[in-house]
Length: 454
Image (cartoon, rainbow, N blue to C red; front, side, top):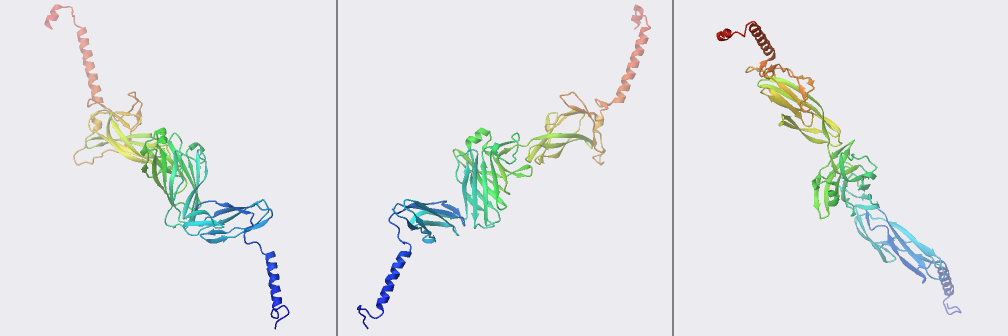
């Protein structure tokens, strides 16, 4: 049935309802298109290289240059997929800034856009390094890892530096898939808060400290040393070593040259724990703390054994070559391992087969002089036990021969003759001489006849 409006019955109400709905929706719904006065001012990102799971902050700005306020919608996308869509109200002649965080679950490269404009290409890695503070004497680097193998090392290339000492690559294994570390590189030992080897025992080119959220099982570090720094320190290329602490002492790490450049030398060392590392040279300081000279009669002479305690005052272990000199000639030597800030014993022997005076010197100790006669050398019949006497510590007697002390080792012979018989013979000779003088004194030596008779 047709109504008076020329429309089927009921259609007039329907058209009216549709018109009212359109008007209401137009009044209530926000504008989906930008206000002609809105001006998108661009986007910045906090980082373009991050670790897996690490946030990147994306910041965009819009300005309303129009005469009236309005709304504006930001569309944040990661590889074309929205991750945020905030809408802001912008008064006339004002700006509004919006920030949103985005993270990435897998390594790779991702495009970040805002309102279809490219903001950045973000590289996502299982581990990354970033400088967080730097001055003339110190550089602090933040290392983060996520998604790494628990049995393998996470490796990062470190930002380059113009300092005389710097890190180039850091590879570390913690047994954890995610961790964070703070590496601090010092080029001046005076600003390092940790305890270092004393300047009298060491020449240091740089110091590295490591703080880690996970226990460090092993770390391999590549570091560079400027050739000018080597020249100023008087160290040669092969004298540069990395050390790690072991209580109050320092352990030497295997250090190898991996690259040589015109201005620098690049080294590599592997550490077994994380803490503080020093680079340069720590010199051992060994002296002879005490000595003891022992002797024993043997089948073919007398065995002299020089025992000593070697003291190393430096905080680094060393392999010390100990030598025994007799009358200025080296007759024996041995290699002794001495711990850092510790001591070891050494024993060197020399067999004497001829009588005489012997001057013995062990390393840099004070010389000891002994006199041995034929009877002190001793003899042992064939087939008898070679060591026929018990070792005894001989007394030391002050001497004046080139600061040498003299050992009184039963010195009872002179030119092979027993002292008691020699003295007796001298006494008899003196008595005979005096008797002859008495006889002659009773004779008239003035008579020529007596002389002729004589």
